[in-house]
Amino acid sequence: MQKNQNTRPLKRSRLVITAILALVTAGASAWFMRGSASVQCDSLAPLTVLATLAAFLISIGFRQMSRFPDRRSRWILFVCILVAGATLFADFRYVRRYRDFCDQLQQQIRPSPPSH
Image (cartoon, rainbow, N blue to C red):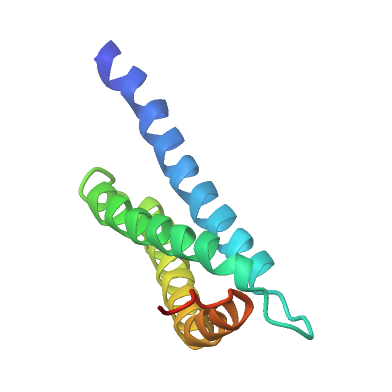
């Protein structure tokens, strides 16, 4: 019985950590995509990493669903999965929209090698 009581706070902390990571990932993603007059090509790589982290958080959320039988915890995990899914979708759309533009801009800046 003592062992069960010790694992309960650990599970709750996992739930809280998952929620915090989902919110921080969404916040960081929004920070990189914040509305500005120009496109920041330097933010595409961090957004790709944040999209990967969001996908990882989705898998963690689904995995934790089986470990938390109570409704409240499942709803919290469901919201975390939704936030991570929205982050993944938004990051993907942003990177896909501006990747070609940034690649063309980078090619224009770099001088082409001389052909012999």
